[in-house]
Length: 478
Image (cartoon, rainbow, N blue to C red; front, side, top):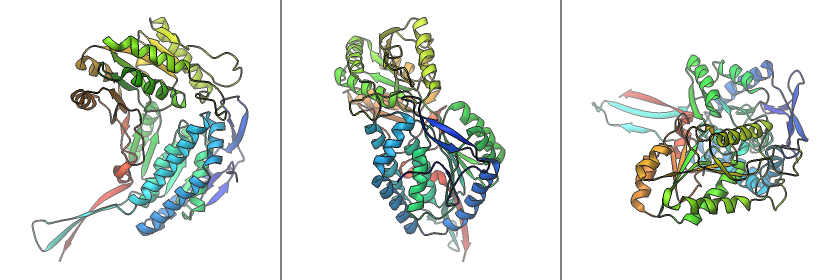
């Protein structure tokens, strides 16, 4: 079974009303994967009307029924994970193993929110008078406009769809144009699982046009974006005009503090493998490495050894560790970041160029830089590439100052075997999430999100469903 290259509106698979489509390109060899429609204003209006009608019915469906439907979505995804992973590799470039991990994680989101649908709690407050009953309840916020990125198109779309559906909302999803296929699979999963028409709608096409049109509508009550800071800022301006609730996950530039008491070789191996995951195209990727001076060279040597062992190749080759970058824009940005760092004094310890023998596609060797400082763009701009800049620090205070010297605050990491340092460093890093002796943070049961320019709101965990509800106070006089 294959997913159609069509949009999903009001329970129907449809082309664009004017027939226009856009090609989706395989980043490994630049061949055509398939084409998807480019939504028109008329298509978006149909989705808005469907979402408006459907949520007024879906919000009245009991929580146990919503839970059962979400569980069925999770089951459907797991039953089709191999074909979904196959398409994801073609569209996005990551390895089959990473794709299967992402698909399973997307299913976990629906599983988790199948439970949370039944746990949207209110409360009764004992007020000034026994003649009154003060109630607080949570109700669905209403139709949602959601925008997901290309680096984890299945998982990050699921993070928005699952809590919205669980809370009783309808949703219009704009998946990424570079890799829309697995999001369309999620729409099919909802269709097969019995989610009513109009509760889930999926539109493809030009992001700026779609966001402006949807956010201009009074039907949309909430906006959820995973994307860049400039796009988030623009959307927030539109949300302000319509006084719409917003959740923003706007990327990061995660620091890693490696203290001299840590298991240095183990830390270097974890960090090097983590940096190569999805070719560094991960919003919570460890992307600025600060190592205590006394162990810096040991860490760098082991890090380089591990990076050099990573094999580049097509994602469907079982021997591949690292696939291509997702698009030409990322390749050109990566080259510019490395060039800027070298011109300002950084030393290339390995990589630093396009690999030989890869004439087609968007390939770049995993790269390690030492001798970095904050004058280099790689230290201040979200890199989203397989380039690891490694610097040093002296004391805990110095390490935290360097870790926090960025506008981002999504994730941070600490490697130490000292409990006191682990607590002080993890509390001192300015981020929404911190890993100690691990880079694995994102699971369905934890709240995912950041601070500062990394945005606000949380996806996942018990907190994730709250962003799709509004609080209502009811005062009953008896």
